[in-house]
Image (tube, rainbow, N blue to C red):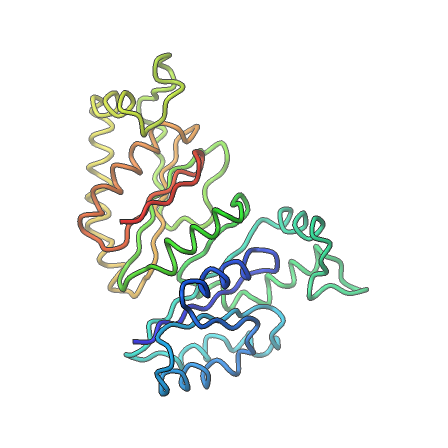
Length: 289
């Protein structure tokens, strides 16, 4: 079966980095491919059997009318012998502006009539037909280059067939992850922060784990989330979903959300082939099964 990964996103979001990672992992990669050439490229490679995994970068440099036709072009690729995934990278506009300022690069859509901020917003509109169909959205606002590379390696390049799960802990004070598919608010649970001996620790430390496991509300919350996910994840998979990000948030993203994300990761690792965990407020740590 031929594996096709389409990488898209706004300029400065990390598309080139993603393609370089995939290339290093054996993918045949093409950047800035005209959309009209995508079907003949895929069909030609499928017929020749020259490779079993390819990745193409599609961005706003394409003809705008072709971008609008992306859903129709995509339909021509669907077949039994093709595993197709769309990965869309983006970042908050202020972050993109900062990156362009630091590198002193010119945005491909900016000109004398259109400044950088306007070009970024226009680019977002042009790429909407792709972003709305993405199997996986990655927010690179707070990711370093190294972290993005690790994320592409672990979550995209090495994904097996079926549904890939990511459990992510976060702090509500820093905002809900924009790429989350399901969000659980666990701020109602007893907070280890108010115990002096536990304040400096995290949900990965045994003392915090023992404290939370002794709280009946924590046990009930965990069991309810497991029940919900075991009921509905198979439905998402039946609907051809490839990626699901399950975010759990508490106030500071250090104790309760970390503990539950880790516990859910451990539970579902025994049931699914591709399960990872990430703690946004701690050092980024994506763990593969």
